[in-house]
Image (cartoon, rainbow, N blue to C red):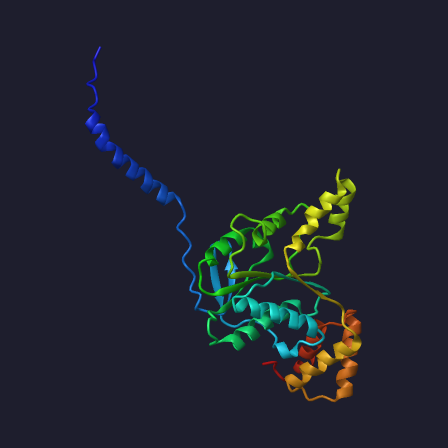
Amino acid sequence: MTLMAPRDPSSEAQDTPQLLARIAEALERLSPPPPPRPDLAAADAFVWRAETQTLAPVKKVSRVELALLRGVAFLRDQLLGNTERFARGLPANNVLLWGARGMGKSSLVKAAHADVSARLAGAPGFTGLKLIEIHREDIESLPALMALLRDADQRFIIFCDDLSFDGGDASYKSLKAVLEGGVEGRPANVLFYATSNRRHLLPRDMVDNERSTAINPGEAVEEKVSLSDRFGLWLGFHKCSQDDYLEMVFVYASHYGLDAPEEQIRAEALEWAITRASRSGRAAFQYIQDLAGRLGKTLD
């Protein structure tokens, strides 16, 4: 039988730091690199890319001028006031813009951001207001986005267009925790604006099903609808009247210099709305696009 020489304790002590260093290097190679710090001076608006956890700058935002948005004067003033208070560093609320489709919910958010940014440019203490769009399917990455923005000097509106949740989708719970109630809480320099056709962001049949099948129906429904309670400001958009619709059409026509007889525009715009069974700002602009094309003009 061959006897093995005992190991030298001092040799083992010398090998340990080297072994730990090799383990640390291996773990660093396996872990993904941290996302690069965003260049927030690159643009006034960004799109959040959840897969790479980066902010893609938007050089030209697709927006309608605030003065062209008609039929929403009260809602406009509410949103402008909330946005300006936030931009000045004062208390402000998360905002849910809900209601009839095509009535300018997302257009109002983008126009309010541009208006407030332009009016406060150069004002003492104003560090910049950035608009960041997050897609509905990336809502679960919202905590990572907020962590990225928490220590920035600028202030941010995170905007999700057409936000809603269907049956079996539990991602709304993570949104609830991020907006209010989480341990860290929402960063002071971040607000969340969302648009939706649904006031409670959930389909009615989903809420009704919870009510009919739960042991305690009241508690089940409260769990579902409490998400919208995280938005301190609700702005409800309703279908517009014929007069409001025609006002939108004529404002667009005047702004873009579309020289056509008033009676022709009126008759065509009404027919356009009837064929789509919709009177809305979206329908008005779609008619204007059609009219401009027939007149050989561009909408610049």
